[in-house]
Image (cartoon, rainbow over all chains, first blue to last red; front, side, top):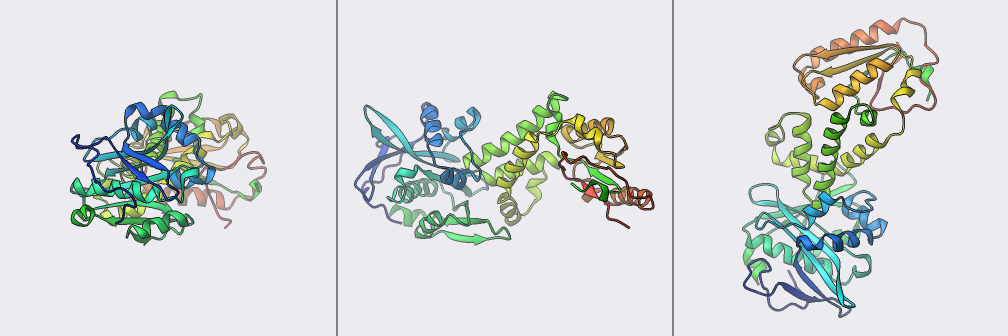
Length: 191
Length: 188
């Protein structure tokens, strides 16, 4: 697994390191990766509303316009080690803006499921792979053996990204959905 | 819709959830929460857990835990379609009153242990459809066609037989009506 620009690998949930990890994208823009928190509800809704139809379909499998209050509460909540939600945040004027989110949640004893989405204007810059890399790293630190997700079969950019993360692609009888599995190895991730 | 081609219908717990709007608030609230839990699972990327809650609601509290892990994953891939199905069935514009026009002989079936929403839908349709029969299967749940298949099959066969010799009926279904998960009887 590669992290293109981050050298230190602080644990974002341990409380003994920086609260965010700064990664630099291919075009040089910096993005802060940090754990989502309840104060992000409004920014998260803005992020979802700003996604293109295609991105919303790829992430939510439906033309979801916005998230319900209950859904917003869940996607901004982390209960590590079983649940972890990360956001990518960028400075905008005097404030900041969420440009990506990813989360995992344990579904079996040592397995978790994950999902990720990146703002359209920030795609194809290496943000998704870095965000997933940090998420996988924390899942491995939590002792999980694998995490898996579902990707629409025509979402080629995401399938290509996951292939670079050495994910296994599992095709079932459903021709429209591909299950992707990332085997987690704490030693590999720590390198 | 070519209503004149229908001789009979058998509806086993039709998921016409839109019929609960304005007619049964508790049942509508219950199924809306199930739909919301599916949407919430997708929003959080928790497909296996979301599908598990869906299966447990329609079957029994521990039903999903008994499904082998590989099958749970395969089933979880269907969660997005379930979310779309909920959206369609909760927002279908056909009103209960519109079903008065449906004069085809209709057997409505539900299990007495099924969740409240589908039992209520059967009862609502039984009151409004001009030629409806309502029958229940004691102790059965939503999966009655699987768990009580002999009883269900016998009732379906009786419904087919009792209508197979009759002359074609028309008009059976108004053009404006759309179906739920109706099973039409084939011509004999």
